Image (cartoon, rainbow, N blue to C red; front, side):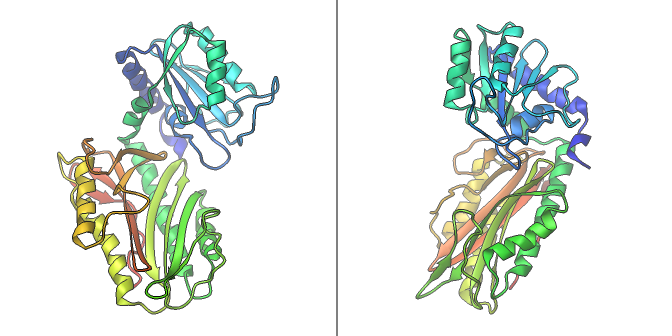
Length: 391
């Protein structure tokens, strides 16, 4: 099954629900802005509503020649026909039978024209994609449409995206399976003498022929104790030239997409001989994830799940600190609601797909583990199925 086998009627229903939510809020329309760029970026909202993605990379505006390249806009009136403004030709995937599609190099001018044609020049417009619309674009829209009132409305589409349809779940199954095979190839390549880049290349040999895209691979390796040793790189994350040595540990968290739907998982393993201290950190990360997954039950909230996993971490004697203080997040056409963090009141319901993750470090050792699950009426169902333990 591929992305364009989600029926056109489902995209139309998504637009209808988004327009209804906008009208209930007193908005005259939604202006949905997404950004592509050849691989992955902030593409999800327009793709979710129309099945369109632009592969054109971002380039600065050139007066009278092009504007807002790599950006796509959907004007979705509360009452009226939608208008999609794109910067590359349709490859046959757009699902917008009830609206119009305009291709132009002058994307921002196309948005202004669409707003005027829809009679919304003085309308109250909800912006979906407030992190995508640049300061310069917002200024140009304001100058061209001074009576238009633009306000953020990201939560409207985020709320719809949080609960997946059967077609989306099928696509996420495929993506998770491919991600699992990719990380297994990387785990097998993590041998003494290998570099981080060579390990990623082994995964790409699986991922790319299957039509997948790598988003990132968070890499770290090293040895704990005194003296501890750590190898990592921020750009690219697999750029460290330090080669693995027998007795090291290695961890990687990978994410990518197949047909736009994201996989996200993490594993760690010893390199060569296994030590008890390595295993203690590896098992601690797994235990926190499993405690979180076990908390999925009717009536549970995202905060309950976050508290379960983080509480397990503290009970094991590891303080909650580091770069990510949640136990995970929703996943779909990107990183979705809800966030599995203490205090989040969003109820966990069937149809959500969650990535549950934990990284634990101590004394120069590191454990990392992440799984993706589908929430069903009968409880959690694991979508990722990569080998969990190499010790």
